[in-house]
Image (cartoon, helix red, strand yellow):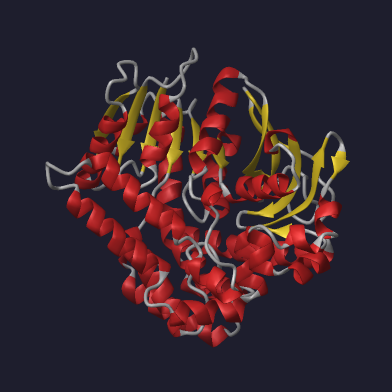
Length: 445
């Protein structure tokens, strides 16, 4: 089976390849094709993979190319993990937004909109090529903003594109663990959009254990989200939000923390990875250990500003081991081998959430089999969550419309309608600022 990874020079690729190395079952991946626009990054990542596969004669073959069409032809699965504009673009997204006093995070608020505006046209082009060159392939989208990009691609690929994220999985695992349950045996009642969802229940052997957690301040304050949001707020909500909702519920504190930080997250990652790829140009560099050292630092500093603002302390060791690759491989195996499973995924709504239309991509538990991912029926969201989901989905639709039409006016509308952008004038200045630093937004007229 052939797996193509778009963005194959990216930093998460060794996590995926490492997971593949543990698969010995029939129908496993035997050939991995890495595609990237940067040949130097491809060479660096290929060195890491070669060290991972050392002394494993049956490891999947690895090849790499800068030709997108060649990478797509014959693929059974395509992992899309591109970053349009690179980490320098992410750093610019953050800088422009923070200068206006609004959030510049890569998937939330102004930064997420800017990233979406320059990513959607590229993702749509990929989707069209997949439909032409590999119509039977399944696309698993890692690319952020994951829900928005998955919806853009679904207009050309239908249900054969599925978005993934490790945040809901990590959240469910933490809740189950603190309740003394096996995460593998728990049903997580999670619903929302990517980076905008809530755990409303966690059932073990048919019993909802979440009320027990919410009623116990000591337990509730003992894990990441309890520390981040505070016990009182979680009890008020009657649910446990995805960590990214900290940007909404504590927006002023988050913006202030990011403004006061020595570097934004994007600038930190840009500098860190530039150092890694420069190190990899030396032939004597131990590739795997250099990558692993860089990855550990990256994971340990994840959402550090938010945790500082909340006084949440350091991340737990269990949250430093990644997660995307586990979700992606579980999804791929379920489809390829009809190994039926349940995963929280980004898929078309299909009437699952009544407040959104059928084509809207949402993030919910899905039953996965050889025919793809099928969203499970869920209870309606409470009003406060429903309002936020509808508002953000409306913004995503404006982003899609702006990317399709090239309308600068529609782009301004997308920024202005976002709950975390508090002024039409700010929205206009954001569009001016982003188009001045991102050549990829020259299409907005």
